[in-house]
Image (cartoon, rainbow, N blue to C red; front, side, top):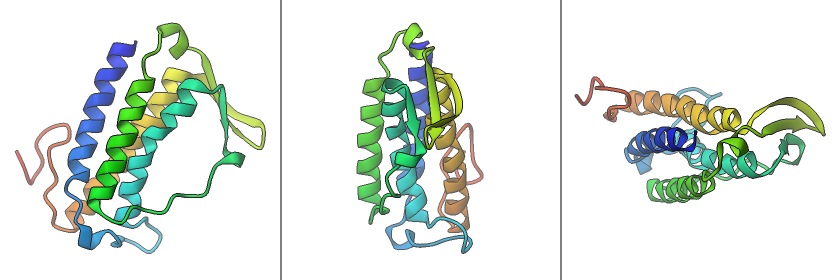
Length: 161
């Protein structure tokens, strides 16, 4: 289970980094809509998502009532890339688990009440991998709307074959 998860993780994080590497420092405050996150905030959020690995892989649960306030977005592409590189490296190091450990239950709570429980491997895929893929999709649209070439994700793009 670990080897398959590591291969998936490495692929998705590598693809995400290629998009983050395209961030223009002069457009980090840009938003496609007033209700949307700014480009820099979205990219900073992508840098933080791998940090969920720690609680998912080591703690029995996480209570949203104890969540810290949202982080201040990073101020530059270099800061975002450094943050992403650090968080992905830390998360990868935490993934050295046995199949039994990956199948242990993990719960998301709010105010002490369990909202749901699932095996750690499923929570990791949902909160780290799928969450990253979701926001990476948003980032690809942000880049396109700013005429920044979108690199290949799962195959060629209109910008790069």
